[in-house]
Length: 72
Image (cartoon, rainbow, N blue to C red; front, side, top):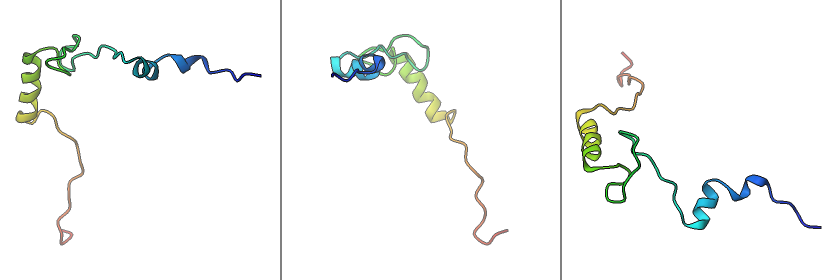
């Protein structure tokens, strides 16, 4: 008696990895398909927009305000 494989076993990311094909990722700035030369972006323009956002502080990770060492 043979064991049945789940129907989803041959689809999705795992199948794409096995076949060597990558799904077309979208540019995080404009949503167009990414190009090999500017991956993960679609162009140098979008790459520069992202760099500007990092350098200007637009991207930030919220955190808790730290208390002073003396507890005041």
